[in-house]
Length: 187
Image 1: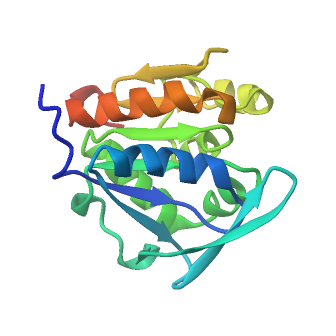
Image 2: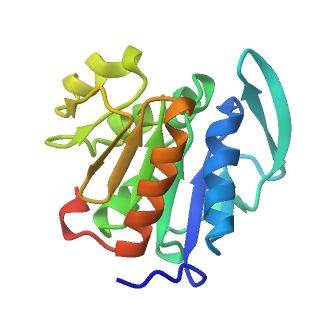
């Protein structure tokens, strides 16, 4: 297995209201591994985070969603937060972008409420994942098996429950990126 990630690129799909630590911590892990990360968002300039119980910082958008192409990235990261996935799941460009990663078998990592977007994209049928516990029923209704574990990997799809799980989430996200395309990842 190739352990050098310096030639890899990861799209981080988010919008206003993403949980700050769920973007910054995995992004730091990716950056430290030599991965090139790109914040992709529906807005053109900046998006604002949610930091625990209040609005957080402003983050510069690297690629506007309407210009983003899944074939230009090796993997996709979906941070959670309550507002962020709720907004993205109503954006057809976001759903198509996500589906393209699954269609190509590329690794996808989603944490906390991030899997809500995967429900709307219709990519969870028959999968085993975890998430923030409050969306367990939604995930099961989408046809997935839900586990209460710090990290779950299912054929290239890495999921975790909350910021407390970030160390395990980051390790598995990087492992799946090293492994590359997963034929079982397709929708």
